[in-house]
Length: 140
Image 1 (cartoon, helix red, strand yellow):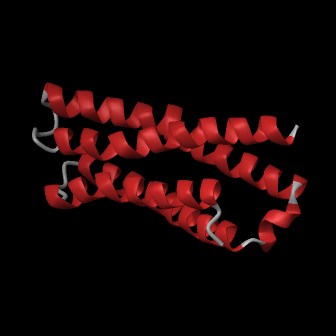
Image 2: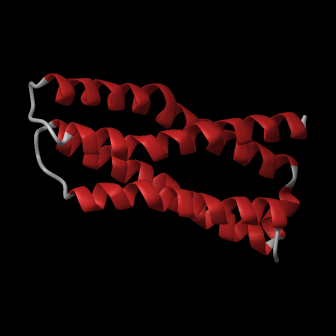
């Protein structure tokens, strides 16, 4: 059972990360137009669907399945790599909330610096690289 839970955990991590990497790009494109214009409304709709259909359900399932793995294998909590991974997952979860907040600002027609949106596109990937190394290599 543990391996099935782990497999679905990985599947939803991939879905979540895909959403985290595309969401800021949608908002960057949305911001190049003004509210009411077709591009603005198309990107607003696409990013909201992404959030409701992929991002939020995926992060919930990542947490539920991750917690299930810890319940089945509590020895994970004794390993240093797991603590680093957990901290980074908490940061990624917070970033998801921040992305939602920034997205709602842009939906209202407020401007967010494009440099920030471009950076928002990179940070989750860098964090994910470290999470993957912790989970696979288990360096400590």
